[in-house]
Image (cartoon, rainbow, N blue to C red):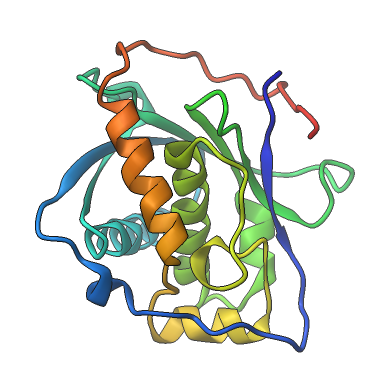
Length: 204
């Protein structure tokens, strides 16, 4: 059965250490990953978030290549399909900023209006970038596993939001290994185009 992983928001007083800075985690060679984005959003905010997300992945040796959904290329590996959703129903997964289907391996839904309401306007691009990176990582890893600290935390708090605006949250060593394994596995899959379905809300 497919399972989804949900990125939730909680504003708390407890924070974990961000860990090693992504640039310190950079391996010597870059692996390529294609992501395709669709949905209505502030163009400048989305573009900045995409650029920041690409830099975060570059810091761990992954070349993230962005395309629009309608210009999504087919290559040796299946692209990640991301939809920015708004407005989001209050009854739809309350508290969630996004969700992915890591066992399906393709689709991500980001609740863009909730991201906008979570932090001040200047921090929105940084939060959106981290949401994109978090969910893409789940897709690549093929896992709903979360970390205690950094970009793969299940729930971020005020201190994490502040840190995001200063510099990107880091991946744990365990997540780096999962990402490496996932990227290797994706390169051996046959490419296929998967249609995006907004009504496929699956519970754990």
